[in-house]
Amino acid sequence: MNGLVRGGLVSAAARAGTWPWWAQVACVYVASRIVSACIFMAAALHQGVNPWFPAKPDYWNFINIWDARWYGEVIRNGYPQVLPVDGSGNVQENAWAFYALFPMMGRAVSAMTGLDPALALTFIAMAAGLGAALVAYNLFRHKVAHRTALWGVVFFSTFPVSPVLQVPYAESLNLLLLASALLLVVRRHYLWAMPVVVLMCLSRPTGVPFAAMAAGLFVYRLWLRSRPAGPDADTAVHNGRELSSLAGLAAASAVSALLWPAIAWAVTGDPAAYTKTETVWRGHDLVPFKPWFDTGIQLFGPVLGVLAPFVFVAAFGLLMTSSPVVALGAELRLWCVCYMGYLLVFLHPQTSTFRMLLPLFPLALSAALVSRSRAYRGAVVTMFVLLQIVWIVWLWVWAQLPGGGDYPP
Image 1 (cartoon, rainbow, N blue to C red):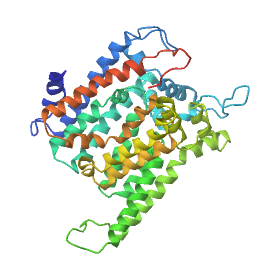
Image 2: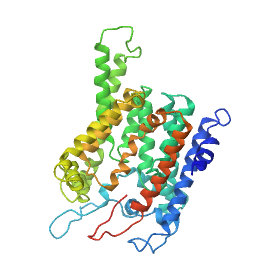
Image 3: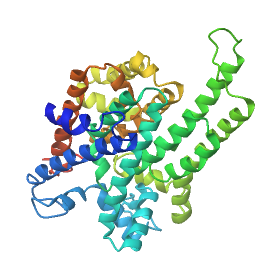
Image 4: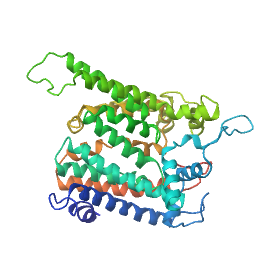
């Protein structure tokens, strides 16, 4: 495994000056996706009877399960104009939980090329994942030299849930748009970031934390301007026009975050159509913070379970103040804080939570900054690949739980 890490994923792509940077990044990304494909194919041999295909499906059928089926449903039938309900009037699972940009692109590619919609979605996911890796590299290069930035991409591409970047899920498209928006923010091109954020908010629900990040950055820049100039003062403090553009980005992000719920309201006539649909998978209404305590009590008991969320927040706070994370800069660090805060407020923690950590991808660079040791970096990639096996075999392979239900990836 370590030989594969050094030979297949890194050494051929890391000879700075031998290949252009984009070829090195592409090599890392494609090699990591081949590794993940091999894991998928091996796991498919152990897939038993399931709701979608016969046992032991081939690779293409195997990656087109779970939420991929919902995106296919959107392509075929669109979104319901009336929310489906059961005999008691409770809203049932439906397509409004899945944002429109990804299936719309799949429909367009399928119409133009004649490809099966599932294959079109897979192609888009793979291409968007490659684009996300290329943009992430450029984002990392604003902070570090080429080799360290490339290692950040290696960690990003081999992260334990990175196999989702090659299945018909919207994660890779959302990461491409998120990384692009963050890159524009770091470069202070706030007006250019606005249309990117609008598209991002139509791919997955990342608009609320992005708006919080932009607003927090605006307050931080105002504070910097109010400080008296000194020998250690920030020499790149925003001017008035930049601050106005940043405030505009915060406002545009907040409005864009409400765009998909507003569309669901307009189509169904129910102002809570989106939130009602989202909470179907939870089994109860949304109560901020409460699911984390409920899950803590379920896992650790009534005493430790209440303390667990506080311990988690404290550990994350320490991480955010560590030297490798501080080196990310104000924008990327603030994004990580806002996104994790968003998860703490709104997320119902479950097995899908691992997948929802992907927007914290800037931390891949901080992991690369921990040490320049080849042994350390090789060990991290090896551990990530082994955890990919765990994630795919434990969560992607469908299995009926004894009490009903399943563990969604």
